[in-house]
Image 1 (tube, helix red, strand yellow):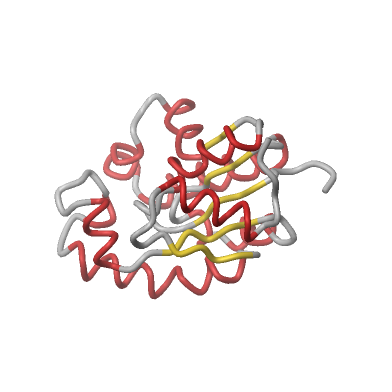
Image 2: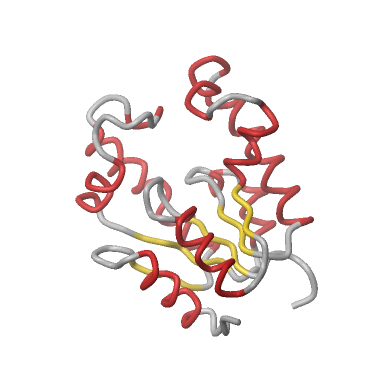
Length: 172
């Protein structure tokens, strides 16, 4: 591959994109980048605050711009926010890239994310809302993914190894 991220991680909140992404970057000897962290750094505010103060459409535009910049500039491991795939332009940018969808079921999500976490899209009835989000997003994650790696009952190290194996990448 000539340019672009070596690995792109997509999946729902709590699937381990940040943790697994950092492990993959370390194993592959490349930099790690997270578009949510890019947005927080650029805005000087947490994502939950951006949602509350500015609204979801404002955040999604920031996210679209952050993903476009990261895909164009970054050559290491890249983790995208859970809703990044909602944007058709973002899905087009991901076409042909080595994208791994980190999947998990609702019980695993509840265990990892918790019911009281600061997740703006899960503020009321988190289990039902998570299921609804996944019904809308699962086809989009699957559309952009070259590989799907289940994270349920796996350690971050096991998930990282599964991504390496699925994408046929060798760690350093």
